[in-house]
Image 1 (tube, rainbow, N blue to C red):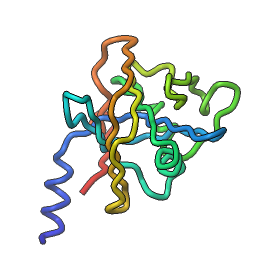
Image 2 (cartoon, rainbow, N blue to C red):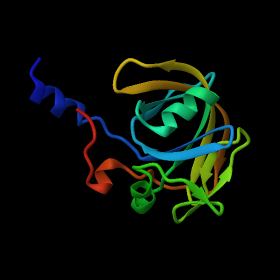
Image 3 (cartoon, rainbow, N blue to C red):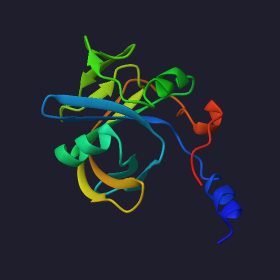
Length: 158
């Protein structure tokens, strides 16, 4: 395969930025993710790629649940805050408040929308696991365009 062509072609797939929340027992975390999309209407399913060597990967695998906080246009600072693990303290991850979803996993309070999911598929096929979640709850605080990799000037793929 032509590696340069593969990388260029895969980088043409547009991505939003989301904050994945996970909790198992008394441990919880949030992480910025971008490989995510809806995959079915009925039942409502989303798929997300989660880096295997991350805290969020371990917690989602153990708890079989997660949240995705959809970041809105202009919320690059929130995305930047969670590229590395941050421990919660005083109701915040770093500078950002969160609330627990009905499934117990954290949702970023400033996010314009979020979904809560139950894991229905977990595939460890590459350096990121492919996780399929059935949407069990959805929340919308306001309408917004999604924050994208392009808006942030990031490239992650290939």
